[in-house]
Image 1 (cartoon, rainbow, N blue to C red):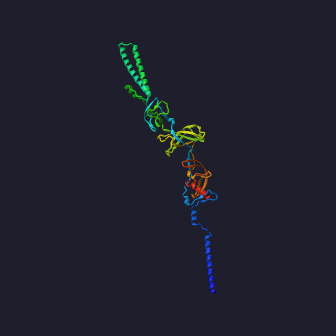
Image 2 (tube, one colour):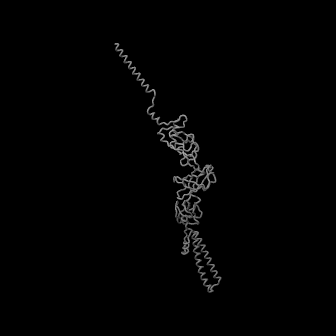
Image 3 (tube, rainbow, N blue to C red):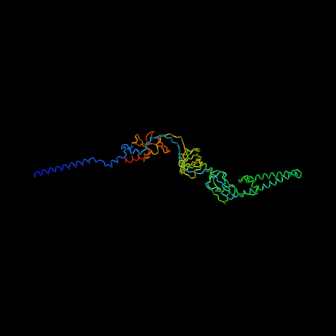
Length: 402
């Protein structure tokens, strides 16, 4: 009986000891609260932020590979102004081709958009005035022929004393008058565009040709056509049957802000680009500066003559022009992607010395040209800055400090 109690007590003591040991092991495992594997992985990808200043970011090796770093350099920035506008024909070189005389259109020889040379036939008209002039020419030629024969007979008779000297002189006067009348008649027909060969044919054939040719007065492009066969036209009656524009130069009409108006002068060179030809630059000069400022928009008209030897520009094209208004300046420059506009409007760059730790720095920027920002203050040439990835650093800083 004693032996049994002793055995029981020994077993109970062993069980209690086992329970205490198990509890100790459990508490030892959980008292430190070690992070789960997922938490460790998350910490490995987190951006380390300077909690004291909230202006620097430290990247791990993987993150650093996604941020491009380049030293700030120096570039030449041109003092210039930009504006938008549209292309138009050079109205100073646009001609409305009226008929010089009344008549009815009988033929058309050019279409809208055709390019014509000076002297090319545009249209023809049946002109009563031309018919009358040719009739007078034929009559004058007949009178001259008659007076010439009369003079020849008078000279023979005078040699035989068949007529008096007075009669001879009268025959000479009549013949000279007929010659003058013929010259005047030929000149009148020549005004209608007839050539010497055509005038000679009219005289020899005694047949009028009332069809008058209206040629192009300049080399250019047909910009308007209001003619049709059978249409009666009169000098100066609008619209003109044809309009022709010289397209060797075109106009660009742009409106600049009132405050920039003192910077522009007639004769300044301009560079123009249009959406139809990306990367191509058309050159020209300012030809006219508007006399008044629009009271609603407070903008001033600037008109430039643009050289277009290949005839690529078309009226109505949207265009941008750049004009140099001062001397070039040499300044610190950073790629445009390396400058970040913060929420409060300040401009910042991210500077580093080891390509791992980046410090935010406020800068003052000036001009933006060819993908680079001019840094007026806050950065020196040679300092390493983030280019691609600067926005990522800024966002990471914002998220980490929330």
